[in-house]
Length: 546
Image 1 (tube, one colour):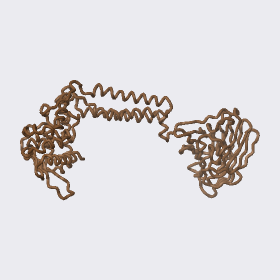
Image 2 (cartoon, helix red, strand yellow; image 1 turned 135 degrees about the horizontal axis):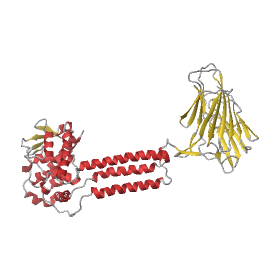
Image 3 (cartoon, rainbow, N blue to C red; image 1 turned 45 degrees about the horizontal axis):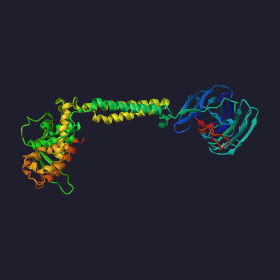
């Protein structure tokens, strides 16, 4: 129980406060180390700022002036003065005198300056018998009022004005969380103009991104400069040589290169589609046979068996040999559904070999995958640097927008890394011819009769149709042409042969194969005379025993 809580408050000429709190507590038969006094010092000002009271403890003694051990800590929005000796307990009646200074607590108005103060605070969990406060000022108090009770109460208390001050007192004992709030007004000029101490709210990330100048302007500059740098780098190092631009039809694969190689030239990427086309190409060329398995039930999944024919693989390109060996490392046949358990390593090795092949043939100055990886790494570093910059500038000066702009540039650069590999002049010319061959295959249906006159063209070009994503268009060109003789040696299906049926089956094969091989309080300084109430001012807080 608190027998008496009396605050002696002196308003200094500089508008700071010198406060002496007399707290008489009775622990009865309880063994306690002492008390703790909690005083709020941080109040929300707006969405991104807080108002701060600067509090400095001068001394803690008993009623006889004997010093008592204490510890000052931060606890959320408050300062906590923990009083007592952790190695010693006390009981019965104890007296405490806490002396501290506070700056930034008074409020300025057009016609007066004001002290709006919560004397004892509403966080005490014990009964308080008597609460009072005395205010000393450099001149007479113009007006005074006070409130008592729980937070928000407008119950009046007792007050009188005196020469250069005012006295306030509760009219009754307080239950736990009851408090006394006082208001005293001074004429303008009696004390230095009170100015609230405003700081950024470090607990609110919005406070890191100030919208006042110069931060928006600096952020805009960083963004535009960064994007300009990304564009300049692509323009000078990532563009393909632009010599001959006209796309003319090509009626056969340029330089008779394999489907996966054209796939790398087309999109500068070695991927699952290229490897899938390679498997079909190996089948067409007689290295393996694809057999569609009967579907088990209405809801059963389709599956295919890949069977090695025994044809010598000495003439295969390195990436083709990796694919072939990866398929049949455990035997001469394998089901597509089984590839998800062991083919991923071979897939990645084949893709890497495709990149090496493209660089060796001088289609690219540097391997495209390594170019992308290099730029992606730099982009990630830029994102990390932007995050660090946003945190440092935001926490210190509210300039987080600058760091955010750098993060945006980093993400744009990360996306742009996809287009940074540059072809050589030879690679650019091959790309132009590849587009011509693709155009030819995509309009193949219009020249159906010409295809009927060319032997094995349907099967030979089918892997290229997979790379170009036009299998259905390619098959439609042969829907009235008997090409069963071209496919019977490398593909066996479950239905009578038809080019469109084969197209549908192969698209299912390609989809399944691709999936299988790639899986793995008083904050605003309001007046206490208009709408004030208990707990509405500064200070206060509460305390307890320990």
